[in-house]
Image 1 (tube, rainbow, N blue to C red):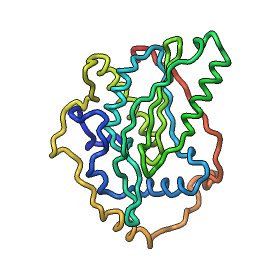
Image 2: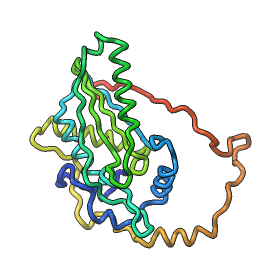
Image 3: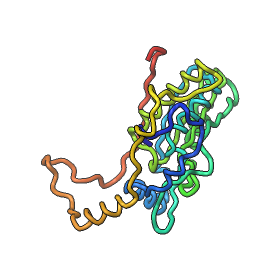
Image 4: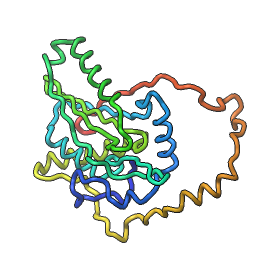
Length: 254
């Protein structure tokens, strides 16, 4: 996922699958590496990137429209990775991601304390670990957990083949813009581009032979890693550390 110049603008239909032209280009080297490693690993969720957004109050219908508009703006979220004739390519998935709503169960969170908190943590952990089918897609999902006290939490889980750390900022900004637009105009929503883009402004098509030529050029020039520039710094990561999450609250103005 990227904040690219060739994404659909406000005139695009919300939830539309990735464009057919996207299927013509081969997967990037990073996508190819992730795809291959995903097939070899016994822990596929290592490539799951998650984002949690909490709401004191939520308009579920407005959020659903914001999700549809954001997904339409970023076709990678509605894609799959398929190997054809020995070449891995991103193709439109059979369906597009849409908001899944989990209705509140039991008493308000404040009245069941630890038991409700544990149940919520279990639901989120289960949703986070659900596998993605890279060959069928889509490679992102949006789940809203509504609480009995009126609050809610949106869990976005996307596969690293179409999503990275920088994508989180883009996704949150587009969801926020779409949600605000949906609240202001309940009948329709689109993530605003500021100005409509013409065909002349669109990014040029990707040369399908570019990857092969780059591989032919750089292959013979491969070099092993050199010594660290800074003495004493680690040469390479040799094992994985524990993951962690960071939470913060924003006031209404923010």
